[in-house]
View (tube, one colour):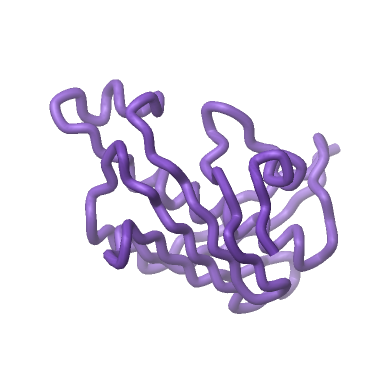
Length: 147
């Protein structure tokens, strides 16, 4: 299953400038997702990170992975998010940054659902530029309903 930006907007509560998934290329229900983020020079964080050599912040790469993982999690339980649903980080394990990500790169977001228990969903996640790993981490997320 693939998704364009219109489907992604239905499945994530994030909006500009913090929507970090441009397209879903593959989604295997309850198992894995492959999505992409086109990294462009007009991203707001490049103004200050760094003016002389723009580099995508590591925490933003992790957020992009978490957003892809959220799409997988929402799809797995058959829920469409609304104004009262949020998907929070519960933990990040063993994050390793292996390659800088720069304007013009296409960040391929891979997330695999490892387990879901007691409202906590655990993923193994990796983002690549081409065949080179940029970041990898174990992500734990939880979905919450707002009052």
